[in-house]
Amino acid sequence: MKLPIGPEVPFKDALKFWVKLGFISFGGPAGQIAIMHKELVERRQWIDEKSFLHALNFCMLLPGPEAQQLATYIGWRLHKIKGGIVAGSMFVIPSIFFLLALSYVYARYGKIGEVAAVLNGFKPVVVAVVVEAVIKIGKRSLKNQVHFAIASFAFIGVQFFQVPFPLIVAIALVLGYLWSRKTKAESDETEAATPASRPSRHHVLKVIGACLLLWVVPLAASLLIYGRESVATKLYIFFTQAAFVTFGGAYAVLAYVNQAAIAAGWITAGQSVDGLALAETTPGPLIMVLQFIGFMTGWQNPGANNQTPHAIACALLVTFATFLPSFLFVLSAGPYLERIRGNASLSGSLAFVTAAVVGVILNLSLTFGTTVIRPASEIELTALVLTILAFVALYFLKIDVLLVVLGGGVVGLGKHLLFE
Image 1: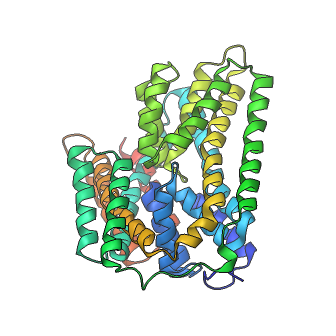
Image 2: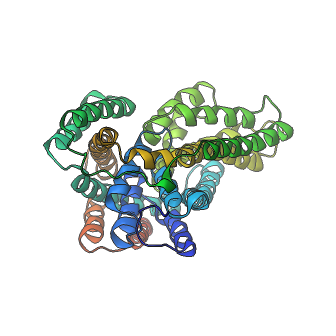
Image 3: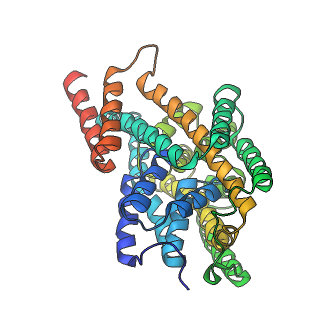
């Protein structure tokens, strides 16, 4: 029996989209989720609204990059294991090459020149994408006054009291569960699991075994080539641990990683900030900043190895260790997610999580917007105008996000060549 997801989607059509998504997924998690919603729910109708939001709620609860996990889950819904692997991989692969190139230029020359100008043109577009995401996701997930209250409390908690995102998710989850048990308001809107979606212990064990084998191979290669005490091996083990304990998205991960990486002398605080700026303006998950940290660590600690190949190896090891657990979580838990769709209390809990996430994304959009539009004490007029134009193009004119992003890059480069 097929999962109730929508029209039959040929695998080649899905593959084309996942490849495209890897090149246009700008804007961090909020922007990427917005792009997937626009393409998969509104335009192509490959997945319905309820399934999309349910999956988003679930991915928010997992450690790691929620947007990449959401793509992996939708790919699994469409074409099972191979669909999940393709969707999750293509979401990341283009950004690997973009960020490797930028990391090399950064490490070799210390500045990016014209490339920086193009990236500065991307930033206002990213702000517009995130703002559009807040509006669209808010409209679809804030269904009543209680949801608005949860979103408001989440925003206030993050903005004014620096409440950790994992704590906000936990509180929203508990409140949602209690509220749904009390009112049973969601009971008529949930759907029972289909026989095809029921979990299988054999399936879970198979996924765990495959992921464990895939994890061991790079570790063995690093031990063989670089040794047990090498930076490469230490990076691989450390970032594997980070992938399992860091909830709350890229910023939470970066805070955790910074503490350890800077204390170990792998990178400086300034380099970490530069890496975040690069990751924010390249396609792919924002958590790709960890690849930059891996590259710079390998670059600055080559030992007896050739500097550039060693840095690339460290970067790829970090990336693999960061994303492999995401496939483990989604592909093993996917059938269970289908089963809990019929549980009114759990569905209500996840709806509260989505409401809280709207408040958190609003906070991130304000923070990022302030950084781009008002980086110092004065407003950057070009960035402000470009942000407004990009928002109009995306939200009202429905122009493809890739064209808008490229347009922003052209404006940034033009300003640099003409006035700087």
